[in-house]
Length: 67
Length: 189
Image 1: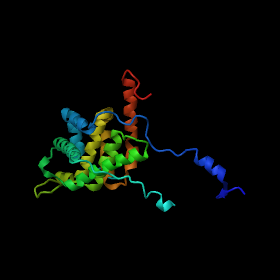
Image 2 (image 1 turned 45 degrees about the horizontal axis):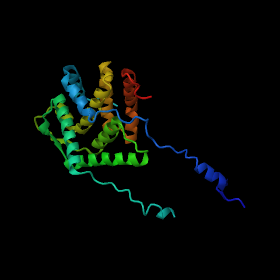
Image 3 (image 1 turned 30 degrees about the vertical axis):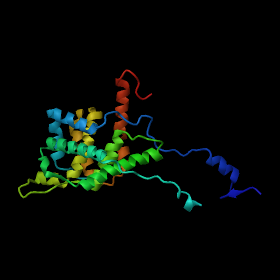
């Protein structure tokens, strides 16, 4: 008698399990953009430009909006 | 059988050497220095719980191992590492603090109360400044609102690591697309 699990023939279970349709996230072939400490480099750019520095000072020191 | 399946398998996390921790601590020191210079805060007032910051470093490192084991050797991109891992753990473990002094203004008191959110915001903004500079150059008023929304969300909303990954993926892909058309060789394809 043909073996069944949950009503599915065992041969079909094996076929489906072998299909490897499960995926894992690898988020595109390119993972890294390149600079080792980009937030430090970005911070240097903020500090090097007065306009940018003023903008972020206002952002960091400013009050918060309501939800 | 299921109960014994993993008994002979050992996937152990090995703590990194002290030099690795030192380098990472140095990185956070630089980030806090920059943040204080931008926001005109005396850096000596920003205190740190080294145990909590080391915990941030270890948690990020552990997650990188997890990616490697369970996500096809994935090396997480900088957006994932900085926003989804480093900022996430800074916000959760809150390693930084500032004592409020009697003479402090309301503004400084608010800085002290929100110091971890503000440092995480600075990490995010610096990352975007480096890789997505256009974002801050067009419509500064909108960017300011976006930053405030982020800061509020960092404190009061339920943001998981994965939601942080997704939140910043559009910036990551925008950067890749810009890089692919601005350089001679196609970068992505």
